[in-house]
Length: 264
Ligand code: 2AM
Ligand code: CA
Image (cartoon, rainbow, N blue to C red; front, side, top):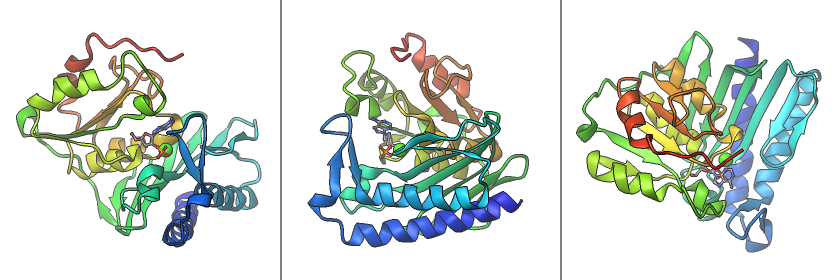
């Protein structure tokens, strides 16, 4: 698919730009967004500007929706959803758990996606109906069905957004004793890739946005997994997000029976 080849190329170039920026990141290049905890760097903006420019040049009729600049274009058929750096806090702290995440959608349906983690040189790519791959190797979700043997990942974007009630701590407290381990890496896109890779059995989040999961959700589905909201329906990420190997979807959904969505 022409678009996936293009997507792979620009994601790798974007990753190289971000990696170079990370090496010379200084406090004056870090800024706050909605709150003191919500950070953006010059690198996020530079990478998004690069990706938007490349996409616009190649596909002038397509819409673009990016974390830092919002939506451009209103044709509504094709839309490229960009998270220039997913895991910005890790990026700022010189940790490796961040990535460039891009999904191509047609009328709301994911067609192709790429997640590139430059620090580990992992390039995840998926195409609808054609599978998901990491550095060319086909991905499959894990077959584990026993919750006690399962590794799950989550995040606390809701705390960063200042949620007082119905935040993720309740579910973290509930799920932690029932599984082999909970990991919190700080990048929803990479967490979804871990589920797709069969390294983690599940991922849940309450407060992430479309651009955090736009690429990773196709990765999970093309690797044989399942993605729903926390009610088991398809209103994710608005009503929370749950991705599993499929086998554990209902088991994990049981933890959220009293979940109340406070987002509109
Ligand atoms: P980011 O690094 O691009 O902000 C961590 O739990 C995950 O939540 C990351 O994917 C992070 O993406 C995202 N996240 C954290 N706070 C967020 C916010 N206020 N809005 C959207 N996504 C957020
Ligand atoms: Ca993000």
